[in-house]
Image (cartoon, rainbow, N blue to C red; front, side):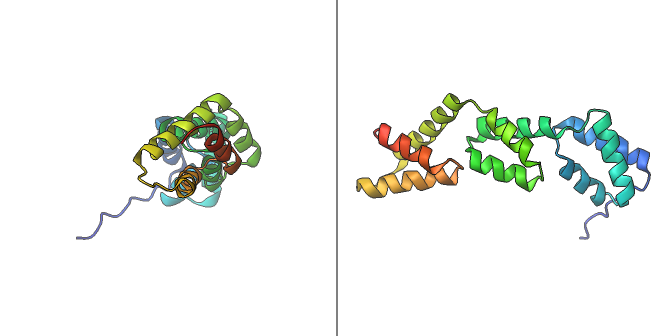
Length: 160
């Protein structure tokens, strides 16, 4: 079966309305909205007009998006700052806003989260060799986006 064809939106006002609903549903980056507008078939000039209007109306705010993304990924998925930063870079958020969003993560909560994910992983590991065990825990925490020096600190201070 053929997939149903997507209806193209040429009217800028209709696109603004749909994009407003798209942004009202959850925080979006400018790039996500821009991609969606192009997907709908809007011309580049119309896309930029819609983006400007959405920013003016308060539907789009990169700083608010960056903070929501960073806290959401940290609290819900227990991602480290490196992985969060990569995600924000993919969404083309400016470095200044990325830094601001990452600074909004409480350091004590961050350490506690790192310790919790490492304890959970340690409980699942059946490795007997201490060095291999520490290596696997280190790799796991790095894959979650945590900084190597912080992981080493946790490994030396805790008995994992």
